[in-house]
Length: 119
Image 1 (cartoon, rainbow, N blue to C red):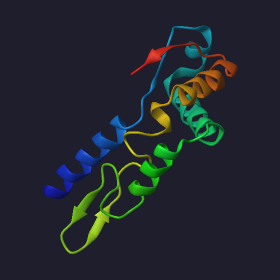
Image 2: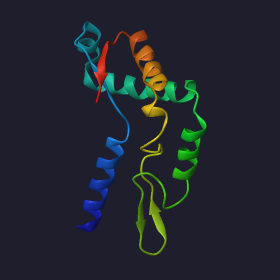
Image 3: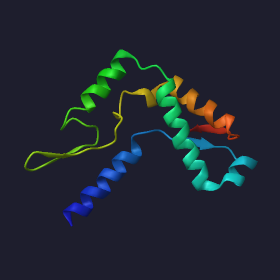
């Protein structure tokens, strides 16, 4: 039972770490459907991850997140193990950067989507 609760909690934390674009209604969104749209979002986020410069503070946050036991959303297990959380630090990080969001929006616009905001 504890394992199930732990897994659910980790999934909730991982899902909350990265802001998500909110689409405006469009023909492309109707044509693609929710699964394809979510796949396009993941691909555009990966493009933005590689295209957006990372500041020194963001790099330090990423480096500290890579240390066992200090992973954002990570959970220490008795006996020395760590269940990693999201690979990105929750804050600060490139996903909080206006440049990163602009890169994601640009990529999605190239694919025919209209982003109306972020949640």
